[in-house]
Length: 426
Ligand code: GUN
Ligand code: ZN
Image (tube, rainbow, N blue to C red):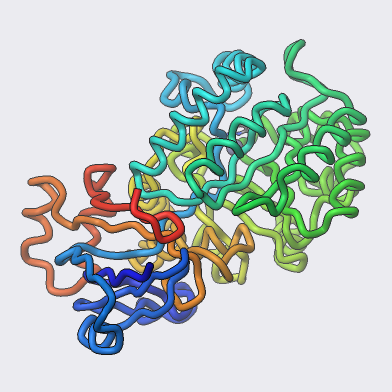
């Protein structure tokens, strides 16, 4: 059944990093027509009401209707260890992350965490995530079953690690290949689910494992491949010692066929010039994880420079290295990191990164991440005065971006007044 949603509707007709803030189209008295899980029309409410007089209307008042947030890099198994104190990357992995990921060997625990994770992300207005699972194939099943039950578009893959991880959290080149292939055949393209080939990162994969996963990707080029790249300087030094003949960190992936369109690299902070040039040439995606990069002390992603050079870039929480489930909080952190690098990101750029930019990074921008006819009806409705502090800051706003920026900087799940998944309000 069709439904007309009215409110202040925000969509993008271009990338604001290249087209400027005018890339955003804002219908202050706007409407979105949804039917059969899809967006059918968008425009001024008066015109859509007149064109569809029989369709029931749901008014969202002055609230902002946007595409649902897309979180391009997360670790759902780390839900319970978010905000763990005091470590940098490698120690954080060993002390907090690996023991927790071990617990997901129990399918019942994995199901509990997957359900908890989606409850949290949906409450924060995030309608698509691209997650790492654990090495356990059943952790992929738990994630996809929970996403499927909620009608979500969602992506994950079995995390592959065959070295530098504790006993019980290691696979082998062969089992990583075979388990990944089996899960891919089982889940990829089922409902709204996509399988992602997922070597954790070079330090925890042998060259033989990366080679096996490169071969699997070559056989399944329609899948994405996700991994981590150049997050911390100590990590990079470790990679160089583990792969002494590699030209740089990216070369450890390149030599095994893991650098191509559809590759999604998390963090990408400390890139060398050769790496930047190759990532651009091969149209790989880079994912900015600002709350994680400050929380674990990794560094300041060069959004201004990399966007100006034409890179495909999305935004992500990186929970639980990231310290929030909220893409609003993540936009705020991206703004703060931009300020520290001398580039104040415009609110239109921040919002675009959390919706269409992240969808582009996942090569799903023909389905999600914007409001346009034919796209899937995954929407978030945002109250721009959700707390007294935000309300008083927006009171004098003269345009939508002035009204939205306090919510970007100070908002959280209290700002999310409604979420639609595949056209269904949840
Ligand atoms: N590098 C390898 N694994 C991880 C992880 O789980 N989180 C983060 N932030 N970086 C990683
Ligand atoms: Zn990560």
